[in-house]
Image 1 (cartoon, rainbow, N blue to C red):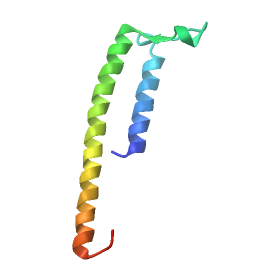
Image 2 (image 1 turned 90 degrees about the vertical axis):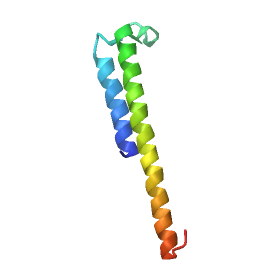
Image 3 (image 1 turned 180 degrees about the horizontal axis):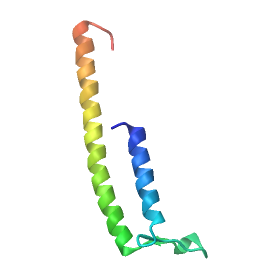
Image 4 (image 1 turned 45 degrees about the vertical axis):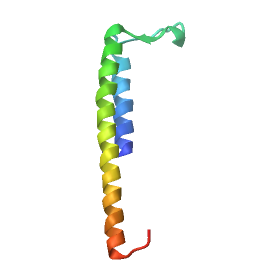
Length: 80
């Protein structure tokens, strides 16, 4: 997955959580009083755990692809 897609996934996931009043309490008095509820904290934690796995696998695949490209270029005699 591309980094831009991962960023969109992160932004979209958090945006959806803060729109849910069961997950996030927004204070009109001050942002200092806005916070995730207990349910929101659990959902955010689970979301971040799953996203971390996706990011890790994406970085691993990207590294593998770059290594393969480098080997092919070396075999063809191209300069790196």
